[in-house]
Length: 164
Image (cartoon, rainbow, N blue to C red; front, side, top):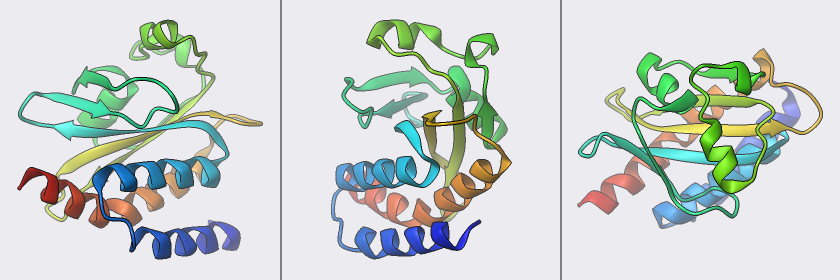
C-alpha cells in the first residue's frame, strides 16, 4: 500500500470518528472507497441474517437493492469469505446482469471485500465497480481488504445500535 493511500485512510479515520448514524457511515465509507480505488461506484451490502438477504441503499443514485445472500459476486464473497476481483463480469456465471439492465448501467469490472465484526462474522460486503482507467488488480484487492478491516468496528457499532 502506498504512503498516499495510508495517509488517505488515516484522514478518513478522523472523519469517521465524528459520524453518528449508520447511513452517514455507509455514505462516508462509500465515498472514501471510490476515492481510494479510483472507482465509479461503490455499494455496501449489509447482511440481514434474519431474512437471508443483503441490502444496500448507498448505490450512487439508484433505489435500495435487496438480494439473497447467495446472489451475485457479492453472494460469492459472502459464501467464500474472500475478496473477489472480476474484470470480465458479463462472462462470470455469478454476475447479475439484470441489475445493470434495470438501472441502465454497464459494469466493466468489480472488486469486493468482506467486512467482519469482532466475532469474525461477516456483516457486510463492499463492492466497487468500474475502476476509472484500468482493471482492478491485486494491489486494489489488498487496499480494499485493509480498508474493510479498518471500517469494520465503526460499522459493527453502528449496526448494533440500529438493532437495539
